[in-house]
Amino acid sequence: MFYRLIERAFVFVVVLSSMTVVDALTRPAYQAGRDPDVISTDVPLPTVIIESGVYAVGALLVLARWRRVADAARRVWPLVALTLLAAISIAWSDAPMLTARRSVFLLGSTLIGIYLGERFSMDQLLRWLAQMLCVIIAASVILFCISPSSVIDYTAYNGAWKGVTINKNTFGWCMAIAVAVLTLVRFSRFRWSRYVFLFTAAILLLLSRSATSLVGCVLMVSFIPLWRVIRAGTKTRHLVYVVTLMAICASIYFIWAEQALLFRVLGRDSSFTGRTDLWPLVWSAIMKHPFLGYGYGGFWSGVRGDVLNIYIASRWLPMGAHNGYLELGLAFGILGLPLLFYLLWRSFRMATGYIKSDESWLSIWPMTYLLLFVFHNFFESHLLETRSLEFLLFATITTSLAMARSRTELRPVHGPYTLVNRQQPIYSTIPR
Image (tube, rainbow, N blue to C red):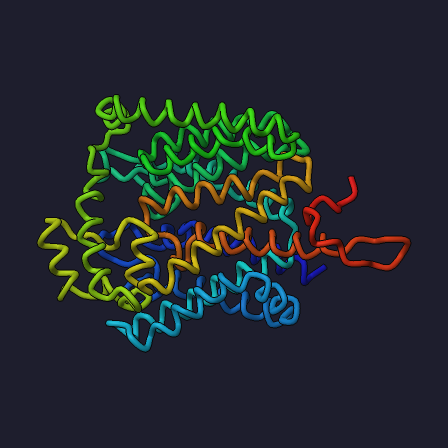
C-alpha cells in the first residue's frame, strides 16, 4: 500500500513538473533567453531540488522493477536508440558538456516514460492525466480570481494566458491535451463536471493565444470519430476514407484560397511568426553537417558561427528551430531522422491495432495523441525535449502500446498459453 502511494505521488509530481508548474511557481516570470529544458544555476534553487528529487525517486522506482523496465525498453528500442544517440553525440558536439548534461536528463525522462508505460495500464494513466489537468484548470481559474497578473502574461500578444505554467505556449499545449482527454474520458462521479472542465479548457485554450495548439486541437478532435471506423468492415472503411480525403482536399483548397482570412482569425502572419524565414536558414546549417549534426543541444549553445549567421539573416534571436524535425537534423544529421520516422511508424501501427482490440473510447487516445504530437512538432521543437510533458507522454504511450501488443501475442487455449499465428492481425486474438 505504501509503495503504491509513493508511485501515485510520483506520477502526480512528475506530470506537474513536466507541465513546468514547478518552474512557474518558483520563478517570478518567464525570462526570454533562458533555457527551461536544463537544470542549471539559472533555475531557482527550489526547482532544482524538487526536480532532482523527481529524477532520484524515478531512478529508485526503475531499479525496483529493472527487469521489467529492461524488457519494456527492449520492446521500444528505437526510442532507446534515439536517447543513446544523444549521449553518443557528445563525441562530435559543439558543446560537449552541455550535450552530456542534457543527455542525462533525456535518459532520465525516457526511463521514467518507459517505467510508467510498463507499470500502469493505458486507461489508468489517462484517467490520472484527466484528474491532473482538471487540477491545472481549476488552479488557473482560481488564481486568476485572486491575482490576475499571476496567470496572464501581459507582454505576450496583449495579455495571453499562461495559467500556472511557465508561458502561454506550454499552457496552450496543456489545454489542447485537456480538451482531447476530457472528450474521451468519462467521469464515474459528478459526470456533469466533465463538461464544465471541457468547456473551461476550450476557453483557456483560446485565451492562451497559442495558434499551433489551437489548430492542433481542432485537427485532433476532428479526427476522433474517424478512428472508430478502423473497426468497421472493409467497404465501410473505404467509403469513409474516400469521403475524408475529399473533405481534406476541400479544406486545403479553402485554406489556400482564404489564407489571409485564416491568418487574421488566428492573429498571425503568413510567415508563422517568422518560422518560414527561419527554416531555410536552419536547413542550410544542417547541410553543413549532414551526417552527424552538431550534437544533441549543441547547435544553439552560443552566439557564434552558424548560429550567429542565422541571427543576422533572420533579424531575431530564436532559441531553437521551431520545428522538431529540423531540430533533430541539427542534433544528429541523417542518423536521427530515419530512426525517428521508423519509431513513429511503429507507434501509429500499434495504435491502430490497439483501437481494433478495445471497443471503448479510451482506446482512441494513443492515435489521437500521436497525431497531435506529429503536427505540433512541425511548428515547435519538442521531439526530444527533456522535462517536457509532450515527450513524457510520447514515451509513455509508445511503451504502453508495445506492452499491450506483447500481451496479445499469447492467448489461453485450454489452460496453457500458446503463440498466436503471426499471419493474423495481432490484436484480433483478444477475447471480446
